[in-house]
Image (cartoon, rainbow, N blue to C red):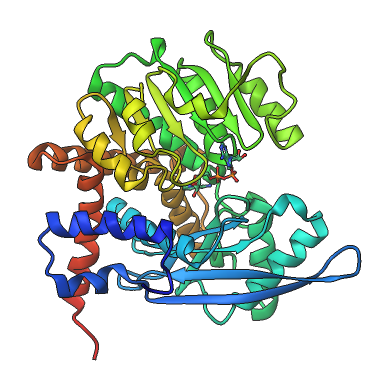
Length: 419
Ligand code: NAD
């Protein structure tokens, strides 16, 4: 039992144990790799529009600082708690290490439903959260980014709040900012583009023609909508999409550009169609070539894993598959090609890294340069994961996580244990 105990952290811990066994990491070296370096919990009081005061709980977990500053998103969602944030920080570490970024993992968030706040209340809460975090973050200590329930505007408020306290503009304190406030071209699209790019690589590996392939995308926020659009532009028929308001199914293929316009003007998929409705519980097991869960954790359990009817499982969300489901998917590896989350959605942090580098240098790149470099990093990581999985005959998740854990472990061993 630790302060992080809970279903999501248990999941990260169980996954780590599998890797520790595979890498033969001695028992006494495991906690140093898994347990977060620091965790901060803060109370964020704000004035509500009706004149009352409300207090929200905020968190930030920094997993390790061995390779450089920590880096990770900020989630505004009712589910947010210390354990969830800690698990996400751990995954972020393996992800950054896998793709070769000079970062440890971090994650933060507020337990709140952002849709229950007015714009003024959301700004007040975002600014208060950043203000509470000022003693613990910095461009060379911990750099925040968006995640579920947060966006470019919130990153701009974070950056402005931090800068006002420092007395100068410090754009490199957060990534995922609007381009007008020091953000990079290509960040908003980076995660979804990366997902689609890696699906393309996996399809090549499986000799699957994307022009005649079908896809199902769960979640239609930043990651899901861009991934669906990119797949659509590659000629894939996207036959089902969903969000927290419901699911839509059209075997002939959905008009994804129209859905993207609807979701961005209405805030969700609700109201798009009365005829195309589907039970969201059926989404994940419809026959398709590509399944991309791009919403929340733990949506693929053992029962769903046994019933998946896709050829490629592209884990766009963080932690969509439970450890019980993993054991089944490992046995089904010849049928279902897994692009594990820490690889699949890593395009986001890769371009966040580019944003940080550009902010530090005050030198900005063209969008095609950002994309070229993103795909180069993703291709290298994809090839490493595939080579490792073939060499050791291990599951793609094991290969990806092992590469990440090995890099962090190597750095810790070389640096030694202080004092
Ligand atoms: P977002 O807030 O923009 O969108 C989340 C989407 O999921 C929304 O469409 C929401 O309606 C939907 N959703 C929520 N609960 C659902 C449910 N039960 N069933 C179906 N849909 C549901 O968030 P995002 O930034 O797109 O993040 C999605 C996932 O991708 C998260 O796991 C996040 O950690 C991960 N991720 C995001 C980024 C990024 O750059 N934004 C990077 C890496 C990983």
